[in-house]
Amino acid sequence: MTTAPEAGRFHDALGPLRDREQVAGRLLESSAKHSFDPDRELDWDAPFEEGKWFWPPELVSLYDTPLWRRMSQEQRMDLARHEAASLASLGIWFEIILMQLLVRHIYDKPLTSAHVRYALTEIEDECRHSKMFARFIQKAGTPTYPVTRLHHNLARVLKTVSTTPGSFAATLLGEEILDWMQRLTFPDERVQPLVRGITRIHVVEEARHVRYAREELRRQMASCPRWEAELTRLGSGESARTMSLSFVNPRVYTDVGLDRREAIAQAKASPHRREVMRTAAGRLTEFLDEIGVLRGVGRRLWVSSGLLAP
Ligand SMILES: [Fe+2]
Ligand SMILES: [Fe+2]
Image (tube, rainbow, N blue to C red; front, side):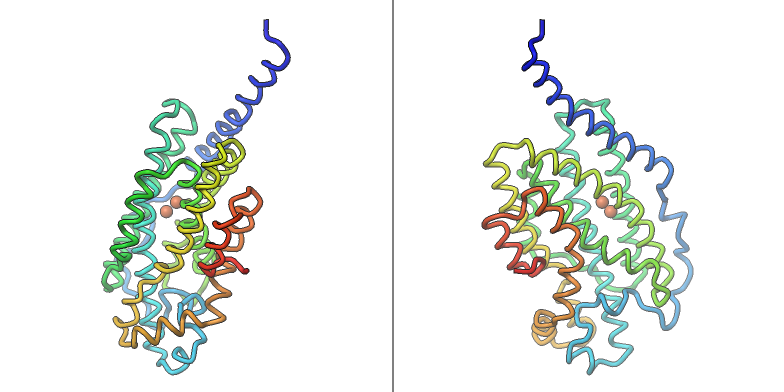
């Protein structure tokens, strides 16, 4: 016969799992209704429109700096095009990391669960996104902008050894900041229709990814051992620093004829840019704070990344 405390434990053990299945079930339903094939959905043959931006000017790293004011309109628009390609390159890098994290996450999970099926659905989404971003970079006529060798290799370690909460904290960092910018981009009539289409598809599908990662991270932080929670705090702070350093590849500046060092210094000193990045991270940092990720050394790393106000 089951005693009361055992019954309690039984309930506690099933509670989060049932919740996990419910969340995944709803996400699977939404995926069945609202998923897009960018190859067919978007008009890739249409020429770019004269006078339209590739990225909203306010979201370009040098906006409102003394250097920006000296640049011609043509050079500003050229920088926006290169920064859009740089963000698309960053997006592909993140998504490839995320796909590996998801594959590792489900390796030990019940194979027929909705939770695993949703992870596989998310991987399908990310495959389409990465191909869409690559196709965009090619069409934009810019180079690709990989992250530095060091960050490339740091991520190689993270995606291979990170434990579950650390993986999902990194996932949210990659998804939510770009998501905030894309939500401003797709309704913006000053922006190229192709860029608006790409960001619209991405926003719709990423909303599910964010939900999945947030729910899992919340469960994990409530149940993981203390060392793992500490590691997640530290790891997410370090990822925030890496993210803010590699957000825009500085090669974009030389590629549009600017002095690289001056451009980096001005973007770094820009109050507008700081405000944009902090606001972009705002929803995420609020959530991470609520579930206990922004504490101790990890919090200090977040502050030094510039994404969190001291
Ligand atoms: Fe994506
Ligand atoms: Fe995603």
